[in-house]
Amino acid sequence: MNILHSGHPLTRIGLGVTGGIAAYKAAELTRLWVKRGLSVQVLMTEAATRFVTPTTFQALSGKPVFTDLWDARPANAMGHIELGREVDALVVAPASANFLARLAQGFTDDLLSTVCLARECPLLVAPAMNRQMWANPATQRNVARLRDDGVVFLGPAWGDQACGEVGEGRMLEAEEIVAAVEFWAQPKILAGRRVLLTAGPTFEAIDPVRGITNLSSGKMGYALARAAAQAGAEVTLVSGPVGLPTPAGVQRIDVRSAADMLAAVEDVSARSEIFIAVAAVADYTPTAPLPEKLKKSTVALQLELMPTVDILARIAAGSNPPFCVGFAAESERVLEFAEAKRRRKKLPLIIANNARDAIGSDDNEVTLLDAAGAHALPRLPKEALARRLIEEIARRYLAVRGAAPDRGTP
Ligand SMILES: Cc1cc2nc3c(=O)[nH]c(=O)nc-3n(C[C@H](O)[C@H](O)[C@H](O)COP(=O)(O)O)c2cc1C
Image 1 (cartoon, rainbow, N blue to C red):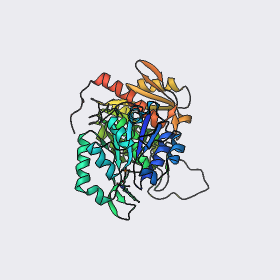
Image 2 (image 1 turned 60 degrees about the vertical axis):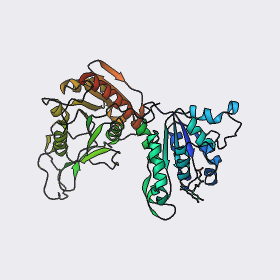
Image 3 (image 1 turned 90 degrees about the vertical axis):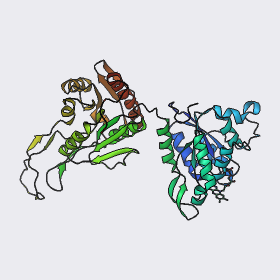
Image 4 (image 1 turned 180 degrees about the vertical axis):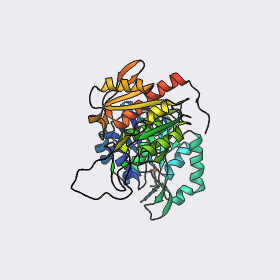
């Protein structure tokens, strides 16, 4: 059993809830997973039912909740065996100090601990307890033993605790657990590879307070950066001005203009194996930005613009370029213009989408164009699309560049 990394898509999750204040966060966790289309089977310890009722989890998961080893509902009364076989992963959140101790010892004196022992799937735990309970040598012994047994720990985090103290021991927030489980479940197809991405718009100054920009939200580039990191890559994201949080594990370099973006990309691309250019880089920039704020006037204003450097074409034309992937957002004859762009810039792969559809929206429909032809993907939310695209990019990259990293270490 490969417990550290499943590498399989998760569709069915067993959620074990134990007795701690953070049990209320498990309700939100259930809601988030169900919203993502996962099936969630909740199992609670008797202590957990004193914090949140099984009815809450039943309503959120749409499934009966199991709490009792002697429950006769599962066919042949073997719930303690079956429940652990019907899920792709078992996540215990919150995991109390008591539960970790029982798990470390292999106790099977209630339903959840028995299912944990009888399971065939990976087990992940999100501890939640007072900082002294977490730091106690007994707990730390149990944690070390469980890690040795292949149990995956999600957190705990440092911060304010329900008891009023501050320290390490609080459970991760529900969104953080969702992200951590997704991260853990991704096959690490880009382990050891360095991936450089650009994202967002650029801002070309007219004067100190005004400029030319575009409607790119950065969502697609950020989702790709996250997916690349989840696939095990070392990711650098050169970002134009956007209000998005930096994805976990991604190194972000903030830039403003096309010229700044070019400088950052040239610096990092030499030590990157894959370059994915998602940013909507300005094609033109004011020739002479004004040093002082332009005064309002009644006469027409003439602005002289000059072309910017095409960042992707520049990198792709280098002597030993990374595997370069472009994005083409076109508003007409999308595939034809995208393929022409791919050939002109000598790219192994370009991802074509409709500019009207794609910019700023939460989902997208794209077609991959490479030397073998066109390959359309279904419309997907940008996060799911990003994971799919990273798989497609990695497969093509590995096919042409082989199994070993092809650039020297920085
Ligand atoms: C109000 C209250 C809050 C508690 N919060 C926690 C907690 O956050 N973490 C923890 O490990 N134990 C906590 N406990 C203690 C556990 O509920 C207790 O150890 C219980 O036996 C755990 O049972 P279980 O592991 O079977 O769920 C709390 C107890 C009470 C009364």
